[in-house]
Image (cartoon, rainbow, N blue to C red; front, side, top):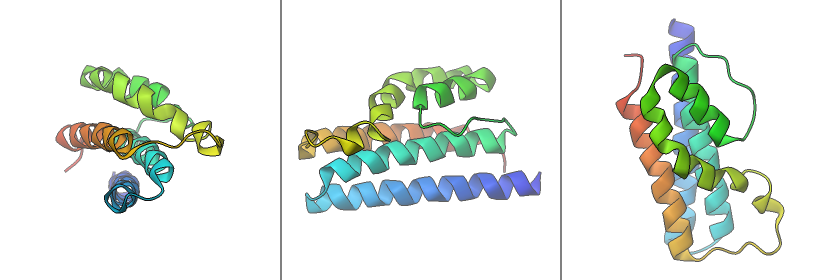
Length: 129
């Protein structure tokens, strides 16, 4: 279990790094599209961290809805995170390459809040000590 515990914590740390990058972009009011990408990536890593800690296999996808479903298979509380997860899913790939996506600061703050909500739930329900 120690291997999974360490791997899960590494996923969690990577997610926290993405969240910090998003926060820096938003506070500096630059690269707000990148902030959305980092919020999506943070949530993806938080959910995968939880799954690794629970020894649950997951596909290497960017679809946060699928990852929420896998988490909810062990803990139905995760189902409540679906709206936030679905809102962030497109920012992994589709929107990142869009020349038309330029969010405002308030838009980016919404993404950051969604990511922080999911981070909080993952940490509150963390399965390993």
